[in-house]
Image 1 (cartoon, rainbow, N blue to C red):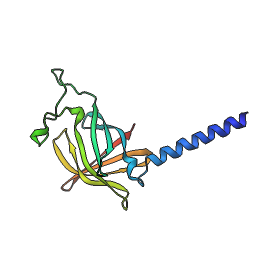
Image 2: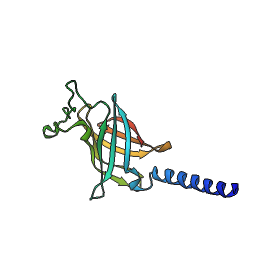
Image 3: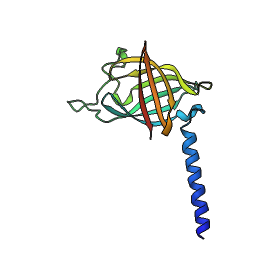
Image 4: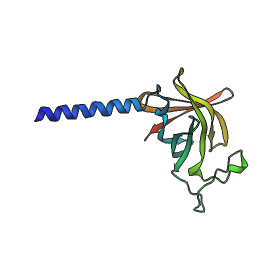
Length: 152
């Protein structure tokens, strides 16, 4: 009886480990799909990465820790350089649109990331690091900044 339990438990652990490792691997384009916890510029948020019909990926905020302003209203995207987007609630902002996967480099890029805390757009590249953390690197001119997103 103990041997059967040991075999079943070991098999389950191996299966879970292999699934988790594969899900956070740079070799498969859709591994980026999911929800992530982000901490950047004193803001904590959660974002969702999903695949669009054109096989590119979009990143959208769906939760912000302190989303209310002093009046108790949801903060808006006031820093957006596109005036038509300044009334977007902070928990609905699109951060990246049109992200593509490069199978040779085994990373995602060829898109712009929007930083709502500063109201700027920068070139972006993404790749998983050890531990399944997604490194999101924004580059503007010769300046780069990396932020690490934890898959949830």
